[in-house]
Amino acid sequence: MSDPRPGSTTTRPLTVGVFDADAAVLQNKAAQLRALPDVDLRITAGSLGQLLTDPSFPTDVVIVQQRPGERVSINYKIRVCRLADARVIVVENDGDELATDVGLLMTPVGSFDDAIALLGPDTPNTTDTLEPR
Image 1 (cartoon, rainbow, N blue to C red):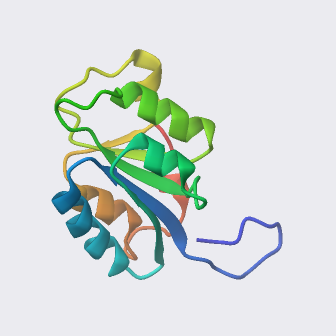
Image 2: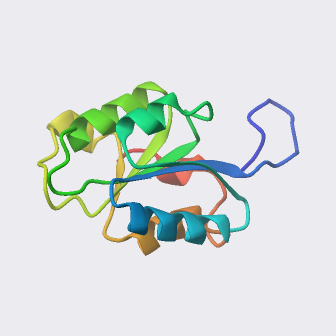
């Protein structure tokens, strides 16, 4: 990703946070993200509170997967991340129905592999590809 300062030609890794209430799945996702070039995994969080209170928040991108039974809605999670200016990728939102405005604030994907593809070296290394629809 290009340095956001005008005229800069340096690159920096894309900073990423991943949020999943399933601890075992979260560890697996973190391992996959750490293996990606040009991705700097800054946050692994099992709750919204952990994500928001991490000193590295906000990251460039937050990958979220809603789990059945979570008390905090996916709508709220997306809104909070976008208010902090983090791009949001939502993996497999089968549970909660998205509010109309929230659907415009995130990039939906069908699987975690699809989310990784958006971050990988074969796609343009910019958050422009992650702009809300």
